[in-house]
Length: 117
Image 1: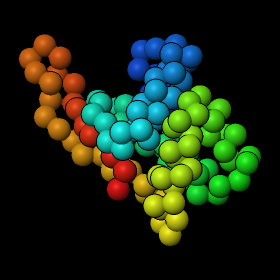
Image 2: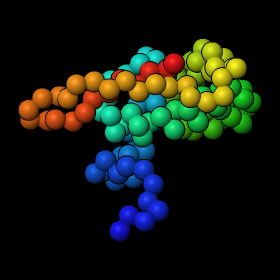
Image 3: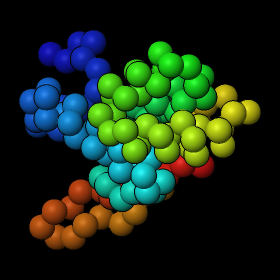
């Protein structure tokens, strides 16, 4: 039974799932738009929005929390210097998911873009 089980497992162990989200978040911050599967994009959305909220606060504690979540100093710098100030007046909803066509006959996963608004 899946009672009260939150999130998608992606058929991966916990450490690999965490690394996947960390990598997707880093790529999204650095490139500001990435293409991935729809399920991964939907799972990434709350993760990245929490990081942007840390960036909006701008405190040392929030910078350390973001650094622990991203493990990439360049991504943290860009998050706090470029991405978060854009959304200073916005109360949430920093990302947009745009659905794309399926991959093809062999691997019919739904694809999507996730980008900052």
